[in-house]
Image 1 (tube, rainbow, N blue to C red):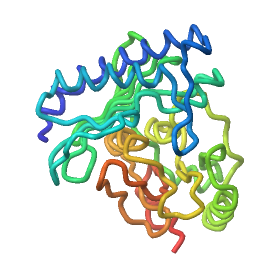
Image 2 (cartoon, one colour):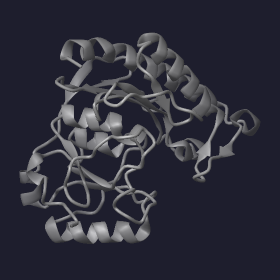
Image 3 (cartoon, rainbow, N blue to C red):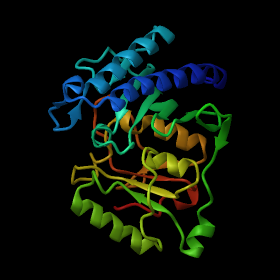
Length: 287
């Protein structure tokens, strides 16, 4: 997809994410147990009526916007056919359902377009904070707070912070396998002078904190105790990755430093490190 086509798609996809956020906020303001229709999925993660309503809206809106591009949503029971290399949308209509239920504000809407195995458009909207992030291959990363102006964002150089011992490293401790979390921290402490993990503003995805220069690294490990399957699914990180790359950063596999590759939509992705400065690449592998 060329830059002109991406630039044309970004604004309407951003609006779709914001409208989905408004649907979610309707449920957030009225946390009635019966209306939420809480269920547990096969992986023991929760799903609510808010997830499903946002998913239904996004799938319909994206289908109307790009009728020839299939849409894969986390909350769909079946997926449309996705030809090898052909573009498709991946959607996490409510990333952070547990945080939604706990009323922490730590949830968001994620939409990404993937083509030829890599994400090329990404939109993330945090409805509680009313912050919209957008990015596309070949274009700058952008952030809009409320109805304010759209501003570009970029990562920050790591060398001055590393020399000063002030690198900001974020960990997904809540969802990480405890043994893998401890091993990761110890390994990174051998390579970098790590400060204490800083406080995280609820609702702002850690990868995007790297993208906007308020953190330097995010270690993406999940409940799986191996490095091969700890990074979640495509809908969890595809939009983040596009925005991070547009801001000057990237992600690498935690185990060997290779690129994160997007194959089948529902394949588990490897644990990863998101970094803001390419100077950190290859220093952070676990092989």
